[in-house]
Image 1 (cartoon, rainbow, N blue to C red):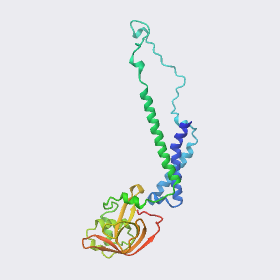
Image 2: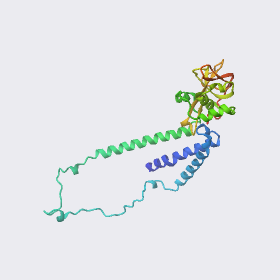
Image 3: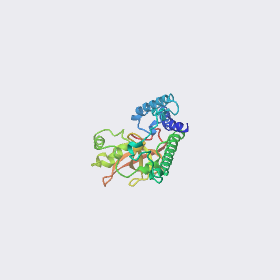
Length: 278
């Protein structure tokens, strides 16, 4: 009975917990803390299917999942009568008292079963802890500290030459931190962007060239693939590290060909409801 309950919990139980969390986050408009809004339809539909499957699983009697359909019934036991056909000297075949087959070690199978049981229990506890923490803890975005850990210093990989071309010839008013980070890192003619007005929102991280870096996490599908985007900002007053701000200013090209934002106003704000860019 305990084994059947554990199997049911690790299967339908944990899946149902994740499905409920997904639907609650979607209903409270907080699913974007974990996945891109473009994937909402897939996550919600899969959560509904999981719940339907979990409810349907209760029609299966507890313990039935261990029945593989093998009906051994009253099949006769296998008997081996070697008789005289196999032994020319007649009589039943007798093994020698010290035959190795009569002394096969039983410790190895028992030890293997213990290891498998320990691994199963450990995996079940870890999986249960993860799901229960998701159920009990309030949803939260990745922190600035997480962004610092993910920042490799390499140019962002979520945009390419087409974005730089758009920035050169098109309207950049809708560009976010991720868009400008790509432009700053890949522009071959930085002076083209000199004087472009910007209004950007992000959180403060220590900068290399400017007074600070305006930073944002950009995700493609979910927070697992989040990449760090940052642009240098030149400002008189430097907000506290990790503080969310809205920066209004102008893109400036330095004499060495690098780009930065010359801030005319830096306004501290609360963390946005949707803290990521996509």
